[in-house]
Image 1 (cartoon, rainbow over the protein chains, first blue to last red):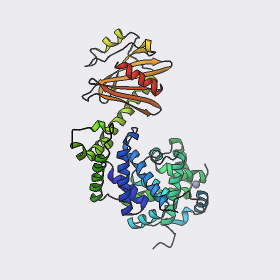
Image 2: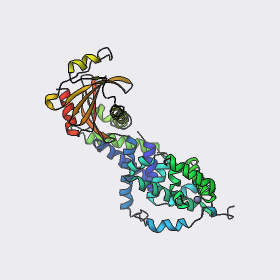
Image 3: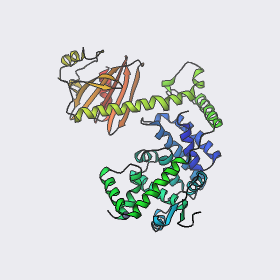
Image 4: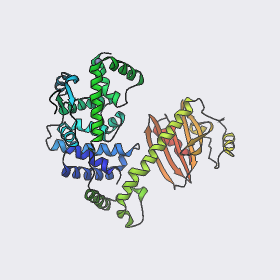
Length: 160
Length: 247
Ligand SMILES: [Zn+2]
């Protein structure tokens, strides 16, 4: 199956549940199959990603995921600006710590991080998958990393 | 640039999405500013941690199997005329290969076509930019066609379509899809159209169209020849030309 692991990975991160990821992937592939005529060329991976993403978002909304942003971005950014990088130390994050931290982020942040860091997509490609303007991709990724860093950071001196 | 501006550019910088000029500016700033240098270090460390963290989930085999089965089932239920006609195979083979068809469709056919679309558009742009539109500028099909003989191991059809509003501008050798191809150049109003032609082992296939980098691309296969048209001309007129070429 083409791009199956990548599709699964995205769904798994967006739903945060193995069981739900299964459903999302199955539904996405059936949609891809059904709407294949809607595919207008280009790289099939982005197209498939966008289907997985839309399927997951529909599911997230239906399941009342309050974590979905529309999330007050203004409210969250200045606070984190107050953090001086000097005072922070990135904990030597093991895999589980990272996974937990990433799962705590809102879906929109997880999404851009997964696409960028795990799937290694360029900004332009992320924009294509998510339908977001390039500038939004950039700022969202930046905020996502800052949040992740805050979650992983411990004040200097407190590190064991 | 201020520290705040620098911090705003940090992510595009570590993602290698920042232009050279600003990258240099940022590096200079970091050289003198420990606080921004520290931020860079942290972000880079974060990237490394995520990269090394093997955070990728692998799809379970059972899921692969059940999705495949679901696709086969869906194909059986939904075989509407027209759908998947590229992949039409005799009888029960179809259902059994539905999943394989999806694999071919998504994995192979489309990326190949996608890559070709890009090549064709790049060829088109190159011809316009390099001011090298034609090797043999001529509005006379009886000049253009023989010119290709001896330069290519096939003989492209060159048509005079002046009456239909497509002026022949000339011919050119180009290189696409790993072989030498004929580029026949037409013009309609101010729009230049490159028609790339080369032999293929594929069977006849109807027109398909795409937009790539703002250019329209139309392609089809007829009588052992692949035709790819690229232009900033609107899709309707480009398709019209496609139809005229094989009339
Ligand atoms: Zn600074």
